[in-house]
Length: 311
Length: 251
Image (tube, rainbow over all chains, first blue to last red; front, top):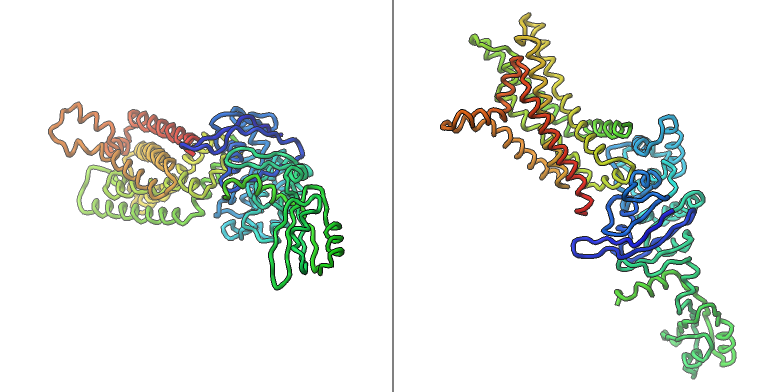
């Protein structure tokens, strides 16, 4: 559905994105991750024909975004970051206008606009001025606009930014449902969101693609895939020394608080060392009040990959 | 073509959603009303060799209001879209750049023409009340309103260009006000500089809006202003189109 080859964009003096290559297949939900300023919005703006790349090419549904821009745009529903809308229009009026611009025939207009209002939960505000809507509703108007012409592909730039937790959940559900009929490329820096919704993830950093894989494979790729927390009184034992001997444990850090030692164990991927830890604690007669396993999250992957500029 | 009309109707209705439209309408109604009243009272005092209609379109009041309205009409056209970011959803929809430029120009033109509708009423009322013809001939009406259309198109296209160059409406208004005022005064130079050759005077006269209005409002349909203003409008819209496209490379 999307095919990007050697895409590069330079702004005055600096390179925003550098030689991007990726493909998004039909029916995929592709997550686009990266720290602020990594080039996510630039890539999306190029794909939506809003601005041209410096070099390289991209096609949407087989249409070149530069040479067949109009056809490419007709196959695309784009929701820009911060959702700019005409605040002097009413919701239905705006959606009618957008549907007409996107070539929806007059007789299908009411049906399509009705459908997207229903889908995005805009029925109760349909006659309100857009300027009077809350952030959450504005976001939904933007989404309804992106959907109104039944595009094959949806490009959503930070669809959940600025929403409250309930709204985030609603939008996430909506995106998941949309993924059944549409191909979606969405950018975000809320990582749990990606794990829950996306079938594949691209991590972009300083304009380069650092990783492109399924969330599961990405988790498998990082060395420190998870961890175990143990809180115990170890008596005369050091604790950390014994724990390190367990096979699969990479390293151990200790915090002490009112006589209780809190050990954080980093383990190799795929291993669960909780049983060994329990046996060790039983054999050495430690008092244990917590033993928890943490699964590695995309956050760990993200931090590991984009780590270089944190330090 | 359907997309063009969709864009056009959005442009026209958006004028009437904003308070600026009503302020411009009111201001224009007052100034043109005062103009009309003064011309008639002046004519009541002494015999004059011109008609009410001719006097109306050639007074200082008329030109004062005339030059002032263009920046107000055009300043928001592109600048507002750039500022609010609504240009992004607009240009990622399957519309062509020229459709957007022309819809904005014609939207402004339609609003501008709406401003003039009440003035037709003035002449009708004058004739109804006094049983005197307001114009020397029907051709005089055609001529003066044709001139309004032509000059309006030209100045609006200048305003479009000013608005596409910036994301700040005030800057757009200042640029177009300066440009339109300069263009307008170009035709007045021949009144200021007395020691110029008759050829230079003729050339400057060719650019003089006042001179063209004088001719056309008498009912003489001269083709020179038609060619001048139509071609200048096309040039200005061409430049607007180019400047609008250049946003892609400036971003």
